[in-house]
Length: 405
Image 1 (tube, rainbow, N blue to C red):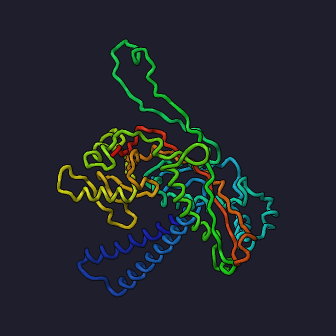
Image 2: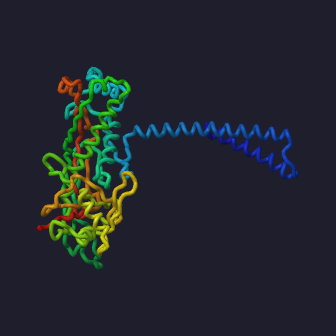
């Protein structure tokens, strides 16, 4: 349809040019009749342009809405796609399910879920609609330091095995010589079995607020949960104890290369830690450093010193922009050690794409606690999601570790 409108407009424009060319050839202006004809054609072409642009804009909106409802979503941190498991139809995306979720959260009504033959999730409560869960995880990406630094994120609904590799090297071989001199030079491999541990969060909402029909209950609860989930999960990605109940923190997997001479580190030791990271990882777009605010303040003070070596530190200037160390992002995290004790790992730097996070998006759920806070006219909500994480290339990171006094 827009093609026809464009063709009609193109013909009108050609006719307008013909009128102008004729008058110019005869070295005169348009006469009154030609002027009226020209003005009418000009108005008609402008109308046709408005019509097809409106149609094209509507088509683009339809396309955008269709893409937003697809099962492929863009990670805002790295711009790459992650794909959800589509092996089964996702009934949480239906209007009926979302209506049932709103009724359940607002007044505790479970009848609509029963009518839809929906049972509680394995973790209790009812599963959040997948598109809402995806939005929550994308918000986690913005609120988590490790995710913002460039960690790889895999969204799946299954247990996942991810290989952990040592460095792979290449070597020149003479003609007719066995590869590797006859020895096996394959990197050693181990496996990260991503179990996805449950992280739980809770909140209370007054019954008066729930009775407000203007309140988007799902969005309100999800927003309140996300900040708490981002902070707690980030702490585990950095310093988590590991495989029995939570993700294995980066500090447990990164290579410790440089140890400061005592419980205070110097500019020279900081630079040595940076250059201890192999160059292929320093060049990576996901290279970043993470430390506590106290350590960042120490580094900033070093940068103000006029004595060599000068530390290349710069403050972030825009809202949400991290500081920079060696020209790369320098993030602050409360999960990093605060006290400067012996053997404390006060700073970690490396290519963060080699920290692997696994999320179970489809297992996000919310449980309404009707009676627990009834005496104060409040309703409790408990929710959470499952996640796991581990460093899959220890050589891509270095920690600055303090020595003894």
